[in-house]
Structures are given as C-alpha cells and as structure tokens.
Length: 275
Image 1 (cartoon, rainbow, N blue to C red):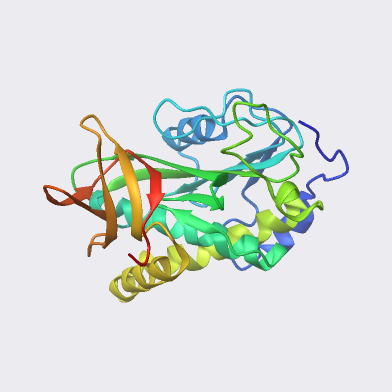
Image 2 (cartoon, rainbow, N blue to C red):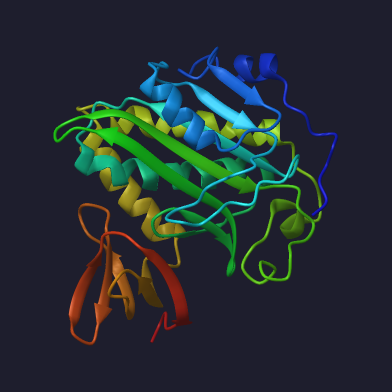
C-alpha cells in the first residue's frame, strides 16, 4: 500500500475549525498507536471529558466489529475515536451509530463531492467495496451510559490493497484518482457528527432527529430495501431487506416471515431491487 507522506495534521488549524464544537481543545494525535478505540475507552474510564478526540497516523492493532481487524497503515487513512457521555438510555445507542454513518457520508460529500452507499448499520461503500468502518463501544448501566466511544476508520490514500482485500476494499484515492487532505475530512466529520449528536441528545429534538435519520437512510442506502442479503448471526439466515423499524433495526423478509436484525454483519447475495 502506498500513502501520501505530505498529508500531515495541524492541530491548531483543526481547533480553529472546530471552535463551535465540544471537540476544540480536546484533540490528541498519535503518530502510531495500538488502537484509538482501545485507548479512548481506557481514557474514558480514567475520567477523560466528553468530546475528547483521539486520532492517529497509524494503528498497529486497529479493530473492526466482532473479531475483525482494521488495516491502518501509516499515512494512509483517517483513524479516529470520539469519546461521548450522552444523556440517552443504552437502548438508543444504535441511533448514534446510524448517525455516525450519516455524518461520515456527509463529510465525504462535502470534501470530495462523492455520494457513497451505507450498509446497515454503518459501513460505507462505493459499489461493493468498503472504504469506511465504524465501531461503537460503550460502558453502561441499565438506565444510563457512563461513556461511549465512536471509532471511525476511513481509507483515504491507499492506491491498492492486498489480493485478499482487493475485491471488497477501496479508498477515496482509488475512487477519485487523487489525494484528499485528511485534515479537511476530519474537520468536516467532527462538525457533522456534532450536528447529529446535539439533536439526538436534546430531549426536545430527539424524536424528530430519529425520524430524520430513518428518512435519510431510506434515501442514502441501497441496503435498506430490496437487497437480497445473508445475515451473519449465530443462526445466519437469508432474505430481502424491507426497511428499518421504528427503533432503527433492519427488517429482512425471509421465507418464514419478517425478521429483525439486531446484530451481525449483513452481506449481499444478489440485488432484487425493483422485482
């Protein structure tokens, strides 16, 4: 994998661009780290304030959902974890994950003018190839969230991938043929995420925010309806996606009836949209 060595981060400029968000003054950059999410969760336990952002030029043990790893070579991507202490019940965490996916989509659109696809709950793709993954982790009691970390990995400068990833992974560089400043992406991402979080966590706006997320996902994602998929759960099953329920969970029509996907990966088997 090749990367762009001339794409550094400028913390002072980032702070200026984030002055109207809770992230300004709380940015922590690492040339190399094992995992920004692991570190962020450790710092959250130690009392780090809400809005603290940890990002790195390289991760040596980047993590995805489940047991998956996230390839994070130096200078190639945006690897960032955001610490939140939202005043919402643990049952509403999915909404923050969905909102994070929309925030990434908005940021990529702002910077590159490209519209990407969203695979429930929050993978971002161009065609069949993934360029961004989101990992949300939390520490919670029955009725409240102590802290929550949203980890985001975006492939930016990769020009190629190993053969085992070449059919399923892509980057902004591959899709556009040019380099994009990670600084601009990070600024746009955090600004967009702030807008999403502030409405979701405001009691007077939260229900409207949830409806907005459902509507935007219906428009932005080809995976929400008419996609023949396999759900990779313990008792994996196949069916056709049939929208999101009022809680944000994916609905899949199977030969045995409608099933709700609460967790697990979703993979396409074939597209039946319009049939």
